[in-house]
Length: 238
Ligand SMILES: Cc1cc2nc3c(=O)[nH]c(=O)nc-3n(C[C@H](O)[C@H](O)[C@H](O)COP(=O)(O)OP(=O)(O)OC[C@H]3O[C@@H](n4cnc5c(N)ncnc54)[C@H](O)[C@@H]3O)c2cc1C
Image 1 (cartoon, rainbow, N blue to C red):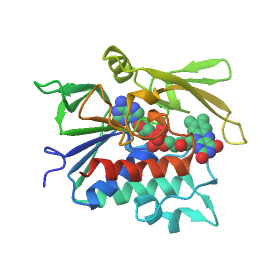
Image 2 (tube, protein in one colour; image 1 turned 90 degrees about the horizontal axis):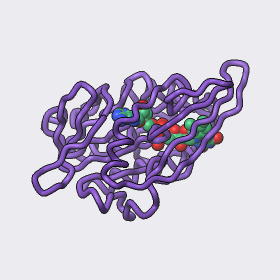
Image 3 (tube, protein in one colour; image 1 turned 90 degrees about the vertical axis):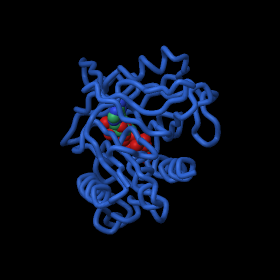
Image 4 (cartoon, rainbow, N blue to C red; image 1 turned 180 degrees about the vertical axis):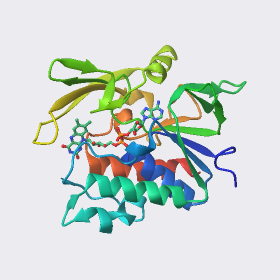
């Protein structure tokens, strides 16, 4: 099995949704390449002390013991535990990079991705788990940044490319109040229009491409994002 060079599935985005999906896929023997912009932001929560209930049998449930006291999660412990468990899986390769384009076969089916370095990565199935990062703009005070979370830059290339391929989006917004450690901010981002995907996450206009979680119109909610990762693994394992 060569998840780095010959994956069965490429998962783009290592947030809660993508990490859960990639780990479950690898555990079920599917060679998986997880491409995410930064290894330092794997399974990141926008704040500390949040509450959520991940589904049983996944990587989030596996690290629950070390990352949770009562029902509240430590963002740092969650990130550390999930990153470690992803890197332990032999059927999973975690690659730090940003996807800027899609690859197509002769029949017009998506058969991989292109990263910002210009490197092509091939796989028969590609899953977008991009959270709040599609065409994202973050406002903090008077400043507007191209970011999906505070200090996490968003690259517009894939968003622009999907739009050029005819994919339709809806605009969404999320916000967080400031506290002693961090300023409050708001993020405006894009999710695929409901009509773009079927109930298995497949984009009907781009065969081979799937989308899950917030970027597919899912609720802005950690429990729902973890559940989206579980459903993604189910849909992609076939
Ligand atoms: C401001 C804010 C407030 C929120 N408030 C709440 C709340 O009160 N309660 C609650 O339950 N939930 C809340 N949420 C939602 C919760 O954070 C999300 O449900 C969850 O983090 C989404 O996980 P995800 O994996 O779908 O996306 P994300 O965590 O956004 O992960 C997406 C990942 O994809 C990577 N990525 C993006 N583009 C590319 C690319 N082209 N190539 C490679 N990698 C890429 C990003 O770097 C990121 O790591 C909030 C979110 C935000 C932003």
